[in-house]
Length: 313
Image (tube, rainbow, N blue to C red; front, side, top):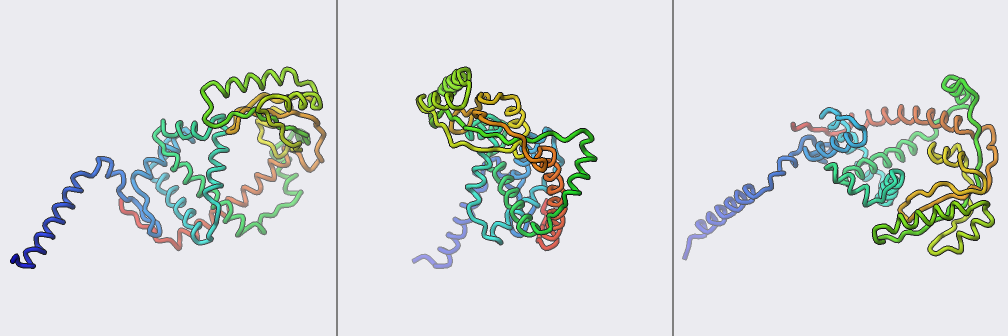
């Protein structure tokens, strides 16, 4: 009967041999998984740094230093860790919505944005991690310091006067009817282009909202959405400029969205109140951002002073 000690020794040798074999079989990319920094127990790897560098090159058109990327990732880890502390719910859905919005503004689908990132060596998860950290940070800073984000109309006028010596741009309130030419997911190639041509054809026939909307409702797979009022002060500059160029009773140029091809019928345009102009909105946003940045820097300094940050390389 074999000696139990000999059996134990054989098992140890077998375990050592198995471990050695696994190390030999590790993929060549394993060095990229080397831990560079540990932030409160959460690792930042060489692969994370490589991914963020490529993302920043793609989005900022410049190559950041390795130290800049490491510092960005450390602060991102601290922001993401707040998710557990404050038990914020529904974050993944909000991230996906923001991601889809980025794709839409770039005139592509979500899958198109995925493909563009991957073509440049960036995983979509890398961008989504940055988006999640930004959303968390905005909610936390606003929640902690909202009461202190204050400025007066005098502050607005003073900044407006220093930044815009010309007369402030007039604001408008637009009454709009969104019209969507539906393109179902998984449609064959060319469907979106065919629908865009249909939208252009409707645009050529559209002379007023009453008759034009009736025509749109009679068309196949076209959704006429409820009337909405939008202030030019709340619009992105590109959309604001497009509406300014569109005559009353006409349609805006068609745009591709995740649901299909969308246009807006401009049914009415009226001057906004003097307090609701694009220039004033821009100044208010700038003042808010200044206060947000100041509070954010102070809180990040506090988080870093309390954190366990270990640099390993």
